[in-house]
Image (cartoon, rainbow, N blue to C red; front, top):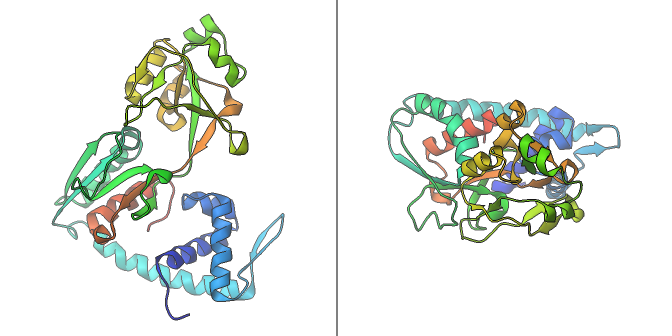
Length: 304
């Protein structure tokens, strides 16, 4: 094996996580992947190395003798690498430069805002600029160092790093609305409800995607109120103006307090993880890498 590229390096990281956790699913969540994508990556790695690394049964994930030996050596190497990178993330290490990031509103609320206190403490001399907007943009042409979008929206020529696990979209309504109008049992019942329309950054209305896998369908729902901003949509839903289609993680507080309730639970849909993406020339900015690692840590993922 003469050398490894970026994809193979990531596959080795994933392999080590699978061996440590003894679970494809747990490791896949850690890296913001689907279990099938994790399985494909390991098959690709085994093909590259020409050896069997993991034995998989319905009950257990067990490394082969060669796989365990590789995992042990990788752990030692990655630990040393992480230790070296820690020095770059230390306070004062990135005492220069500016990082400009474009993120859509849900990502700014869920990912960036919680990370800001630790980032400001760790990188006091880095100038961090956050622009929140939902329209699709060319981050390079518009002068940004990085952007945050769902994985399937990241341009193919960009480097992308998962910041979270998969996101779940749900239909929710206020108790007073549900008392007046009842709860829908199937997506077809939405035709008899008032639905708060979701306006995308390109000014098109977003269809409600309900169900999972091959059973997922897009629905055009009725409603005369169209909102682009998530916070305003949540306020309208809490006021009983209609049902809303929202990220479950975005309304965690409202669900916990009982201000909103999920309906059509069996039809909740899964979307790609949030990803930070950037051109390769921004790859080595310690401030950007530090922000990514802070966000990943807060979402239960490992350092990059």
